[in-house]
Image (cartoon, rainbow, N blue to C red; front, side, top):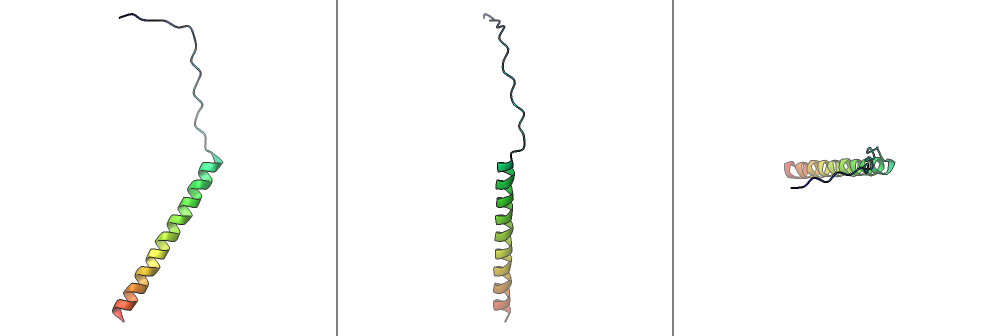
Length: 53
């Protein structure tokens, strides 16, 4: 096998930074998830009250 040497320097990869858009998207997803958990808890509470009454 042959080995080819190159003198070109590869461009350095940019370091991943925190994107404001990504943080906003995660915040919206977290709020929606908490909303679903609250809604499910409320429905479970209502169902339990209905079954036990």
